[in-house]
Image 1 (cartoon, one colour):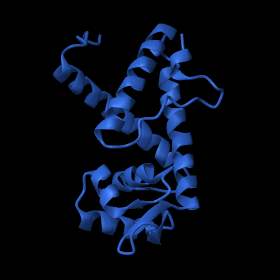
Image 2 (cartoon, one colour; image 1 turned 60 degrees about the vertical axis):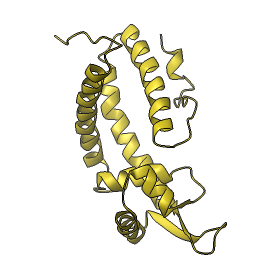
Image 3 (cartoon, helix red, strand yellow; image 1 turned 90 degrees about the vertical axis):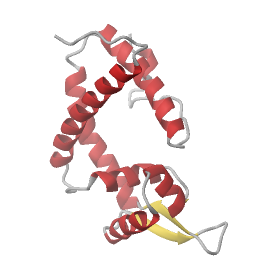
Image 4 (cartoon, helix red, strand yellow; image 1 turned 180 degrees about the vertical axis):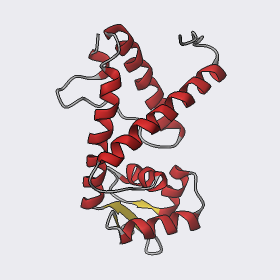
Length: 171
């Protein structure tokens, strides 16, 4: 039986969140292995996710978001570019900088992986009661906003599902 978590105990919640993240990683790897595009490393997936929806990001900004050194980011981008998952362009604001953007193929790969990963997570969510789903949705929205702000990504309003239902609408 799961132990009760006290909402004010940040360390206990951090450990519980970490345990859940490990379970999500297991589910996601199952979903990724089912996708026909083949394997992409976790660091490559993080970079592609950061680049998604961006008009262009310089390597320093990408490195800051990843928490990586410039040399590591450059090599990562070399591998992603060689795989056709990102494109490099001269910066529109500085002649000395290069910007990277997600390629069409990179966007397709992210979409494909998400589809398979969502199916894995959805199978777990179907086992939960409506009240537990509502509580989870509220917590996930708050965590998403705080985590996005912490790593310098834009804080977005909750995304609507394909059927137009927001997480806050689950009851």
